[in-house]
Image 1 (cartoon, protein in one colour):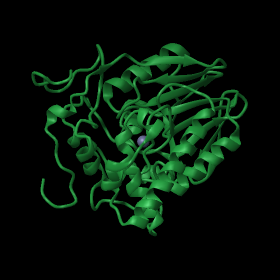
Image 2 (cartoon, protein in one colour):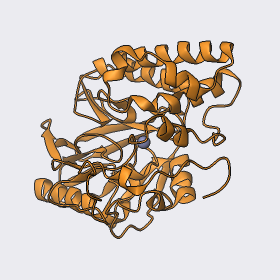
Image 3 (cartoon, protein in one colour):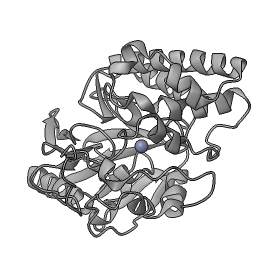
Image 4 (cartoon, helix red, strand yellow):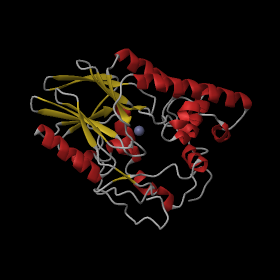
Length: 335
Ligand SMILES: [Zn+2]
C-alpha cells in the first residue's frame, strides 16, 4: 500500500495471536443471559439475550460466521426459540458481521449504525486475511432510531438508549430497568483500555455520567467479564487521565505518538491493550483543538501509529477447538 495516510503493514505473522477458551454463558435469571467471548481482546466481543413468553431478543452478533453460528445455536437450545429481534450496540465488525445468521430477525440499531454498516461493508476482512471469517453477508439494521425506544420481549422491558458519540457516533446501550442490568456495548470494557478514535472524549465522559445515572447493579461490558457499576468509575479515571495528558501535549506542541511513547500509564498500564492510548490521544487532542466529535481522523493514521508503538499489539485470537487460522502460523510465532 502506498500513501502517507495508510498504516504500516506488519508482516502477517505478527497477527497470529493464539487461542482463547470457548465462550461462556452467564445466567441472570428471568431469561436474561450474557454470552461472553474470552479474553475480550480484539474482535472477541460479548453478546447477550433475553427470553420471555416465547419471544427472544439477542444483543449483538459476532465477528465470524462460526462464532455467530455457535451463538445462535446456544440461544435456540437455551430458549427453545429463534431470536425474533437482534440489537446492534454499534456498527463495529465484531458486533455486526454475523448479523445475517439471525435469519428473519428484525435488527434494531441507531440510525448511524445502519449507515456505517453499509458504508464499511466487509472491508475489515481484507485487513486480516488470517481470521477465519467464514461466509459473511452484509445484513444492516432494519429498524433504526435516534434517541430511545422501549422494546418488550414477552414480559421483559428493555430500553434501548443512544449514548453516543463516545466509542463511535452510533453507540446504544440496552438497559433492563426492572433488573437493573446494563448491556453497555463498547461504552465499557472490563480492565481493557477504551477506544474512542471513532467517537468523542467529551461524549465518552457524558456517556459515563448517563450510565451512572441509570444506577445499574450489573454491567455487561462490550469486552471482558461481567462486573458492577465500578467499571464506570474506572473509566471516568482513565478519561480524566487522558484529558490531562492530551491538554498538556497540545500545550507543549507534542504529537499523539510522542506523547504516548513518554506517558506513564500507572494503574492503566495493567489493563489489556495499553497501546490504545495513542488512538485515544488522537481523538482527545483533535477535540481539544476544535475537531468535532465523530469527525473521521485519518492523517496520520492513528491505527498505524498504534502498530508502530507496539508492533505485536493487534491481531485476532481464535477460539480453541472450533476455529483455525486461514494459514498455518510460521515456525517460532507465539501460537
Ligand atoms: Zn467497538
